[in-house]
Length: 313
Image (cartoon, rainbow, N blue to C red; front, top):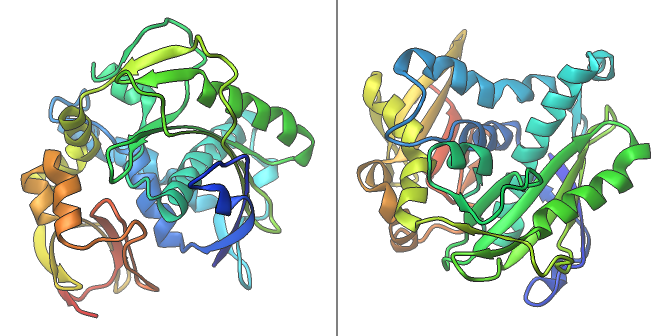
């Protein structure tokens, strides 16, 4: 499915992105992005095992409102009739998922985690008590940090103001670990029954006295993969070979003969803090592999719909 992204204000080495572009996005891509954005955590997760299914569904829930047009993704008829509070919640969650997809496919930013969740785990320290904080933060494969504020809106009337607010929140972070973030992107997802579209804007910082963030790399990666690793350990996971790479996999839902499974590279499950090196050694690109039956991300996670135990290219 084609997903249009409108990029603006990116400077070198990202200036070539400015303008309109289309990327190929499947429903399973959205499932995978929702899983990793909505199911963050750490080994000391505040979620007891009995709450894992709820938290997992919390990450997946927005995709039930997605549908496929002839060549594009769109929201289902009736989405606009949801109560305003529910529509706002699901739009925001979809905004985060599509922001993560765009960051991976366009910017080589493979890992994005929710700022609020990481802070609650004690992994983020702020220099300010300001509540106007971005949604997502993460490093690229070179170790440079990036900041994103993601929003979703149904009507076009509020898009400009929403985008300006998103840009302001992203640009409010002046330093991460003492270094200026490489990108501070404001993102707004337009949700429509005629097709989805993402505004992706990297403004010049307007607040040179913005607040700073501190986060330790190894702690970030342990938290990013933490709850997924815990689930794989707690339930009956199995080994599968996908494109000649070993994954630990878990079937999370089934419908008839079709099973939806999640997976993580076995090497990352064993050493999550070494994810950058593992993925680099395995030759993973930022986008990863994609077929109609699976979505394999540049972060080593996978979602696929199959009953086969051995999938090869």
